[in-house]
Length: 152
Image 1: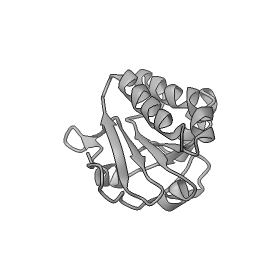
Image 2: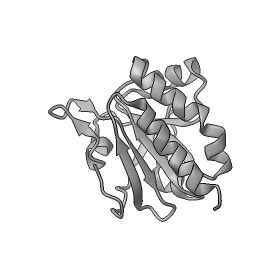
Image 3: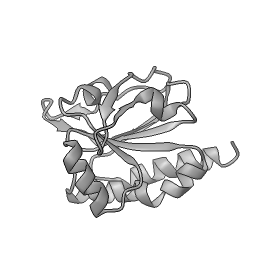
Image 4: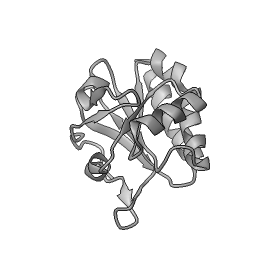
């Protein structure tokens, strides 16, 4: 996992619609939350995505951009996004290149770990959390981010 203060590795990935999205696009107007998750339509991943969905309006009001990243195809992401009314972009990291750069690959490089980062507007990792099955930790992390932005 990347430590706070580390420059966030730049990337460009296709989203659920096939549009290319770069890290710079995500943090151009404010901080970005990048959540890496193992797969679409799995119980824990669905629960996690729904946490970010349920907090999305608060995040948008606070100027925070949320994006999910995993190795799934854009087509699978589009289906997952539609099935659960996810309002944020899902990015396709087919070769796990970005997940590796962010220290979010485990289990002999086969699985993406459940890691969430806060990247500042100037492209620096501000904070991070890793919790494989404890979705409440990701919710608490997002709540901490939003509480910190309330006065911003």
